[in-house]
Length: 257
Image (cartoon, rainbow, N blue to C red):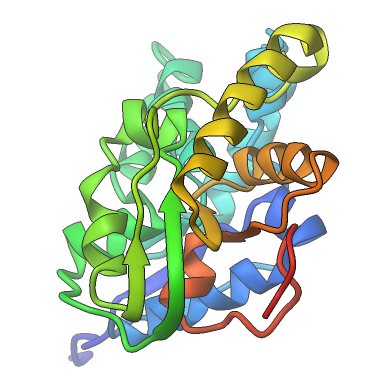
C-alpha cells in the first residue's frame, strides 16, 4: 500500500508573458506555493494557454493548445497560474471549447476544476493567513478584469498585502476599472486603449504610492509603458514579487530604491 502524499503536487502554469518578459514572477510564485506547503512542478513543455487564438475566433488552434495543456498538467493535484486571465481561460473557457465533445468534455472539466489563480490558491485553497515578507513603502493595487470579474479576486491580494511588514496600501480611484490592455484589444483599438490607460495612470499617480501592483502581466506591461512615457518614477511589479519578498530585480518600470 502506497502512503498518501502529505504535500499537494502543484503544476505551475508560468504563462507566456512571465516566461518571456518577467521570469522573476515565476520564481516568486514558486516560492509562495512552496511556502504554502506544496510541491511545485514546472513542466518544461508548456506553452501558450490559447487565449489569443480563442479571443480571435480561431477555435482550431485554441483546441490544439488546450489539449496540450490538459495532457501536460492533468496529473497534478492543482494547476496554478500567476495570472487571472490565463487562469480564467483554463478554468472557464476550456470547458466552452470542449462542450459536447464526448472524448474531451469530462476530461476537461476534471482539469478545469483544479485550476486556480496564484493568490486565490494561496488564500482560498491553502488558507495561507500571512506571508513572510517586508516592504518599506506604499503601494496601490489594480484589479485586472479577468481576475476580478471571472474569478472573483479582489479581497485575496489585499488580505495578504496587509501582512507584509512595512507596507502601506493606498487605494486608487477606479481600481476595478479596465487599464485598456485587453490583449488584442489594445492593438485593434489603440486610440480607445490609450485613453483608458491615461485615466488609469492619472489615478495611480494621484495616490502618491511608490509602487503599482497587479496580478496580470498584460495589465502591468500596459500601465508600465504608459507610466514610463509620462516620465513617472512609480515602480511597477507583479504582486507575487512583493508577497514573496523578492523585489531585488529591476522593476517592470520606475526607479528601484
